[in-house]
Length: 304
Image 1 (cartoon, rainbow, N blue to C red):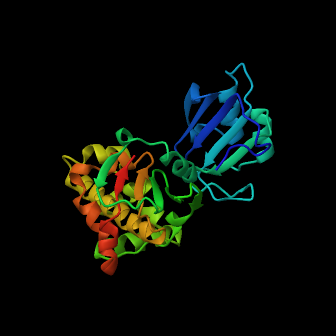
Image 2 (image 1 turned 30 degrees about the vertical axis):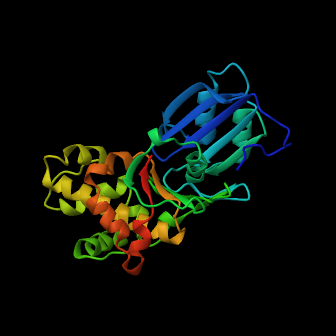
Image 3 (image 1 turned 90 degrees about the vertical axis):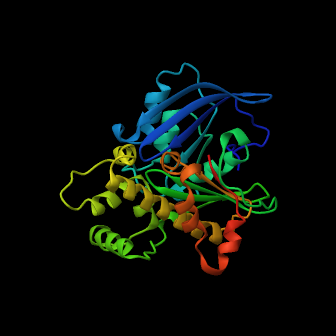
């Protein structure tokens, strides 16, 4: 993966990098140095407070007095041959020409946001990781990133260094108990197709809580549900159910992409939900794949 679409000899002096999410958009400018990239400026914006990608870019760049030479933006959407499909959790239409106008250069690469996370896995140290399952990493195996946030994204990093994005989070939810079937029925009535993203994400936690608290309790946001989990039994059950869903979905992704090199959790929700001290239910769901249980038990699992 390279941000340079043009001559291989081109080395930009100033690079604009962006992590665009359904909740927040993070933008930064780096200067290319001999030893790597030096952070010059960084800003985080609430995505829904802006009308589109070009708008948030214009706001960010309005305070910059020097032009950028190259741009790489990670977007929460499928991207094929430069075409950005509709963003699943953000009502923006990405117009590449408007993006080029906003940044002032045609050296622009748009990639899937979780694929960008997979690129970043190569730069992590042990200090950046919390081990949820030690396993036995295969150095010649794939590493898989599962991003749990406003959505549920999945990408993979091959041992060759090649990355590729997937839309595995939109695969069909697999209910396996009475609560799961009740949740599926509720979501099917609302959305039609029920994906893993509908249940194993920040909004998914709110839907789980709403089902469990169907006795007239007021609706709660995901952050409040997590903060109340220590004292409110309904919130606790909702969080535990979300952990189970994340584990079950991640086990599916790990088998599909054969994450023998390790599975890495990223995203804004993952560190608030997954905890090395309370990982039993999550790991049971992750490894509960019948004859493939021993395969999954050997896969290292980390929280970024």
